[in-house]
Amino acid sequence: MTQTSETEGDEAVDRLARAGFAAKGTLYAVLGLLAVRLGLGGSGAGDTSQQGAITSLADQQPFGSLLVGLLAVGLTGYALFRAVQIFRGDAASFSSLPDWLARITFAVRAIIYAGLAFLAWRELLGGGGGDDETEQSATAAVLEMPGGQWVVLAVAVIILIVGGKQIHEGWTCGFRDHLGFHGISGGARTRLEWMGRVGHVARGIVFLVSGGFLGLAAWRHDPDQGVGLDAALQEVVEAPYGPFLLTAIGVGLVLYGAFCFVEARYLRASRAD
Image (cartoon, rainbow, N blue to C red; front, side, top):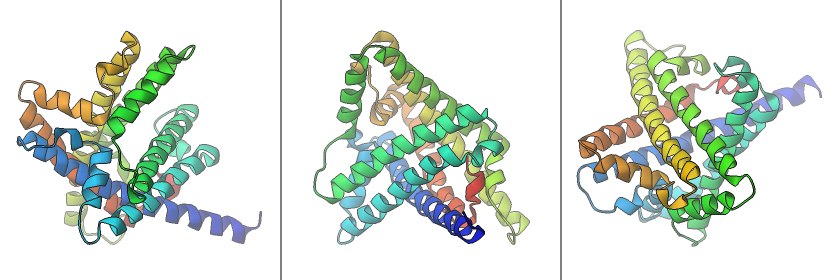
């Protein structure tokens, strides 16, 4: 491979990553608003999921189809970006995780965002449908397979690891490693970093809750335990001080979504773990 083709390949990966982070930011910002609505006692608890966020965008007339189309393209790009990372392994060297585990997390994220891209394309083409039932059906199918219980449990553990890593990145501001904040004043940089801190912690909490319920479903061999993001957030709102906690998480997710646009602008894709 010539140096020119390598450079063109890097630029293609960079474009995929930037489009993907922008799409992810849109998805999390809308999801955060839905969580705030649920936390404040609004109706539509069943919509507080990735599919609910996609459907909410589709309902924004007259540009709903355009928004969902852009989201579908961006999520597809993000899934491809993470898939490329599995084989390139460049970001794994900057990760705090062992190389093999970092590559597994890339694979899991590629699969998750490929699924979200599918939901967006399906919404765009008029398929609709709920992803919570799909997640429960998929979990039930895997649990019925030989060794399926351990597969689901392993996925739950990986989700928990990713959630813990998100909280760690927020606490330590570790996301700075894959961003190039050159030319930004100290005050503006501090505000952006705090946005990233709060957003990463909120996202990490959501991952921990979702992974915990998925692990519980595997341990009990019971997919009806509740395995979707919607089920996880519903459990939060029903806990003591749940509405307050969910509202705070929702605000954090909105900030995380906004920070994803910052990442899309200042991203160093080779370091994005």
